[in-house]
Image 1 (tube, rainbow, N blue to C red):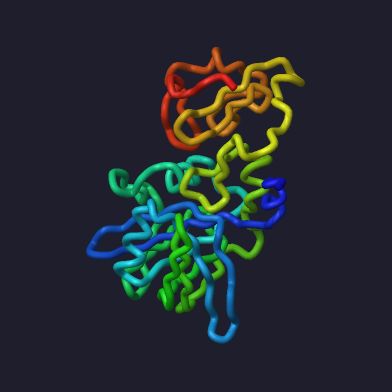
Image 2 (cartoon, rainbow, N blue to C red; image 1 turned 120 degrees about the horizontal axis):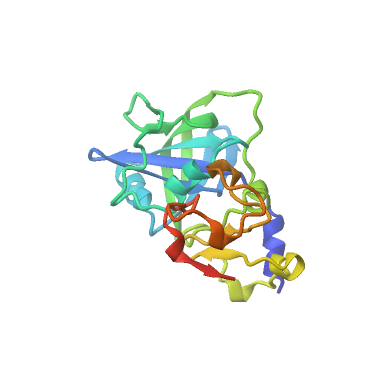
Length: 235
C-alpha cells in the first residue's frame, strides 16, 4: 500500500480553541470539514493527547480560526508544537471572546466559527467532534486560506505526532534527499520535525538562502517550536 496516496486528500490549516473552568488552550488542526448544511455542522478531529481535547469534552464548545496563506511559522509553531498545559499560547495574540466566553485567535485568520459539540466519537487515537455552528464570521475576503500542501511544500512544515496525517517515516516511501542533489547538509529538528534547508534559509528570521546550518547564529531557534540549534540532527 502506498501511504502517500493519502497525501492527495486536501486539507486546510486551522487553530482550534476551547475554554473550560477558566483554562484555555488551542491547537493547529488540519482535519476540519463541513458535514451538513441543515443544520450547519462541521467535524473537527483532535488527538486524545491534546490538552484542548480535554477542554472541549468539558465545555462542549470550541472555536475554529481559518488560517490565511500568509500565516507565519511562529504562529503555527506556537499552537502546533507546544503544550497548553505548560505554555500560554495566547500570549501576544489578538484574541476575541464569544458570547459564551470561548477564545478565537484572530491573528492571520480569514474566517472563524463558534461551535457547540453535538456528538463526540471515539476514533482510536483521536476524538471526532461533530459540532453545530453557532456563529460564523469572515474577517478577510481577499487573502486565500493556508493549505496543508502549501504548509508542507513551501513552508517545509512537518506534521506533529498528534496530527491525523502524522506518519512514521519508515511507513512512507521516502523522497530523494535534497542534499543528494545540492550537496548541502539538511538538519531536522528532533522536537517537531522542521527541516532546515540551507538552500531555502530562514528568511522570516533574517537567515538568507544559502546559509549552511553551521553558520547559523548561536541564538537562532527553530521557527516552529522554538528550540535551539543543539536540538537539530543532520539528515
